[in-house]
Amino acid sequence: MSLTHRSPGAPDRRFALRRTRPLAALAVTVGIGLASSGLAACSGSGSHPAAGDAAVGTPSSVASPSPSLSDIAAENAKPGTTAWSIADSAVGLQNAIQGYTDQASVTPGQPFKLFVSTTAPAFTATAFRIGYYGGTNGREVWQSPSTPGKNQTAQTITPSTHTVECLWSPSMTVSTQSWPAGDYLIKLVASNGKGQRYVPITVRSTDTTGKIVLVAGVTTWQAYNAWGGYSLYHGPSGGPNDRARAVSFDRPYLDPDEQAGDGLFFPFDQGLVSFAEQHDLPVAYETDVQLETDPALFTHAAGIVSDGHDEYYSATMRQTLTAARDAGANLAFLGANAIFRHIRWGSTRLGADRLIICYKDAASDPMYATDKTQTTQDWRDAPDPRPENVLTGAYYQCNPVDAPYVVYDPTNWIFAGTGATKGTSFPGLVGPEYDRVVDIATTPHPIEVLSHSTLTCDGHASYQESAYYTTSSGAGVFDAGTMRWVCALGNRCASHLNEAGRTFVRTATLNLLTAYAQGPAGKVHPATDNTAADGVPHSGGLGID
Image 1 (cartoon, rainbow, N blue to C red):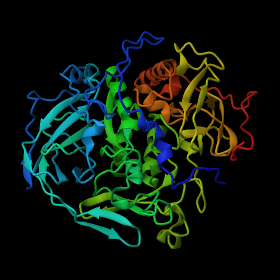
Image 2 (spheres, one colour):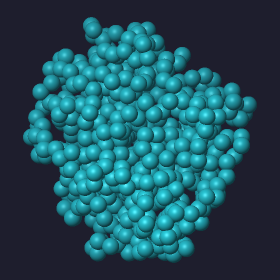
Image 3 (cartoon, rainbow, N blue to C red):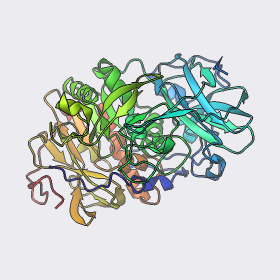
Image 4 (cartoon, helix red, strand yellow):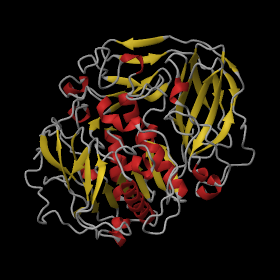
């Protein structure tokens, strides 16, 4: 039943878009009267855009209490900075400085432990909240004092699963008192000038009622994390045979295409975060771990937004999204290849839900003998096939690809004000992975195909499609069907996209999220099924055409 043509052992080519990382100054007026929609130029010459166990955490630049979660405008009116940037030339060798936290996210005011290893005699850690802030895209909320450095190398590797876990001592406990909810980067700087790194953490929202929830896909970040030699894609050999079957959050991030430690925040989250805050959308912040640990948190959300690559889902995570949709929450998948891999959660020495288990093959999973519903193959595969399109609407296809995005239904409300007509083409907007609508039993109806972009992937003729469907609860569900959607909101993939393509995406995204903030979008914008229309071939469904 699988149509996947991607190579699981070759993640680098999937993330080629990350090589265009500088944020250029943009001033774009889009068709529905937006003000400047770009992200401002950043300091530094590189491509990371401007940006003992002692308890620390007094803010260095914030004295007043944080605003309410709804007051995005007030938060972004505070002074921003481009000092969160790390230039490529400043990253240094991997062991120069690196770190991780004992929690992927915390609530405002909740402390976390920061583990740092450095070859320098001392280091500083500075926390930046990522937002819009007049185009600077970050605000400093805290800085540590100079802290003695220590080169930490202790780790374990579990032979049966190739799981790497660090056994470091915490360098400090960080208080998040007065830190507002949002996505943060902790910038580590070695005192000897030989290295800088990021450590990401989310200060999550405690209430999402009526909010548009931006969900950071940290399970997917961790799947690609090759720190210690093992990811869910490859081991030291460089191929899939010795890859990990379980990966731990108890280690720094070593990214597929760069070394700065941000996970996959830059290509798949940062543009969305800055865009949403620029336009004062009522956003809340979570990671996909909360889909597992706190399902009730999402029940009364106005909308839930999956980032540009949100591939790894447990059964509970998937059920949380389903329940929220069925309660009327709108969903948006602003990428491709979402909910593709089935995972389970496990514990590490630092706590529960810090181990992601994914064998990618049912028969080799120890759960095969006892509970086949929990084996960790692709969701669409046997022994219990549950394709992702029952939630996303569209169905993952192939990688890598670099192709124009072609508008099929310009009359849809999401495309209002874009100026697009049927057949309007935006070069480079499709890639490096893509989805399309297929004619199978799990495809929801009514569903509207919004784009139809012919392409060739891995030598096979195929096509990409964005889609929108609605449900009896009134929820609207949008799948962009391309990983370059979020990076088009910023300037992460400028070498692939022209300004017309970025303007198109920004206008469509603002239309979408503005409507989502008003409640169940399907009540105002019900989908009209067009899958039987001429020129949109969906029969045959599962194979690359």
